[in-house]
Image 1 (tube, rainbow, N blue to C red):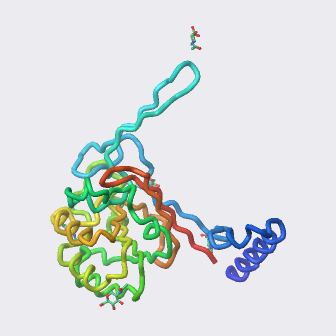
Image 2 (cartoon, rainbow, N blue to C red):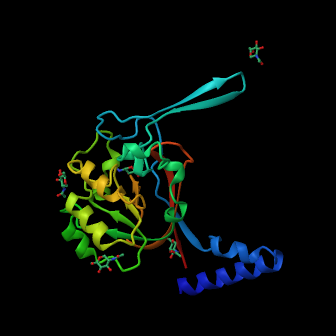
Length: 250
Ligand SMILES: *[C@@H]1O[C@H](CO)[C@@H](O)[C@H](O)[C@H]1NC(C)=O
Ligand SMILES: *[C@@H]1O[C@H](CO)[C@@H](O)[C@H](O)[C@H]1NC(C)=O
Ligand SMILES: *[C@@H]1O[C@H](CO)[C@@H](O)[C@H](O)[C@H]1NC(C)=O
Ligand SMILES: *[C@@H]1O[C@H](CO)[C@@H](O)[C@H](O)[C@H]1NC(C)=O
Ligand SMILES: *[C@@H]1O[C@H](CO)[C@@H](O)[C@H](O)[C@H]1NC(C)=O
């Protein structure tokens, strides 16, 4: 029933659009989000947001008076604070000068169909867990919803060291078996467990085509297929804050 209503609404929107703007309609239709539910999966960047290895959180957003009539804000934030993407130069320092920075990330990887999968709450993202998830062949984007969301880790200011992430063997299995996946999202500050931060980033970023999208807010997201839109800042740095939304359309 819901689906039929959805289709009717879409058809109606299409006809109205076609009738009113015949020349641009064909360009607008594919990206038109009429009939879609949009979920913002970005944490609000605010003073003292939970931050890697910190008990007090981090980030300063200072709103200063400018003249008598305006407020002009100033940000003092790490490039990895809140929801963000990593560029290859995050772990391969030599790539910083070669332009493998956030501004150069492939936006086609960051926009498109995505699969949100739930991982077992009693394990990290190991080779065994990944094999059990049976991510369908050809999938380009995956977001892992883990125990990090169930434990509401981002609701506490103090960093949680025992968060869930990729283990080293998980990362190795992933690049070997699931080579079509280039967008890898997770629901806490790092794609890797605290213990394996360095090897996992080295493995995933080695070919410079996988983009880790970290610290996604997934409390309102059910597993399943969506369209994701993630746009980082056009920032010359090894990472960037990003705004990510999920669209579920009929
Ligand atoms: C700002 O407000 C003060 C106090 O009302 C006034 O003396 C001053 O001329 C104002 N400055 C400007 C640039 O408007
Ligand atoms: C966690 O934070 C969200 C808002 O960001 C709030 O809706 C929720 O109630 C919080 N949960 C707890 C346990 O504090
Ligand atoms: C995941 O790995 C981290 C770091 O080794 C560990 O502290 C944590 O307990 C593990 N989580 C699970 C669910 O096994
Ligand atoms: C991931 O790997 C498994 C096991 O090799 C395979 O069945 C599945 O199709 C792969 N998925 C992708 C997206 O490559
Ligand atoms: C959008 O969300 C509403 C409320 O959660 C739900 O009833 C509806 O089926 C959703 N529509 C789509 C296209 O996902």
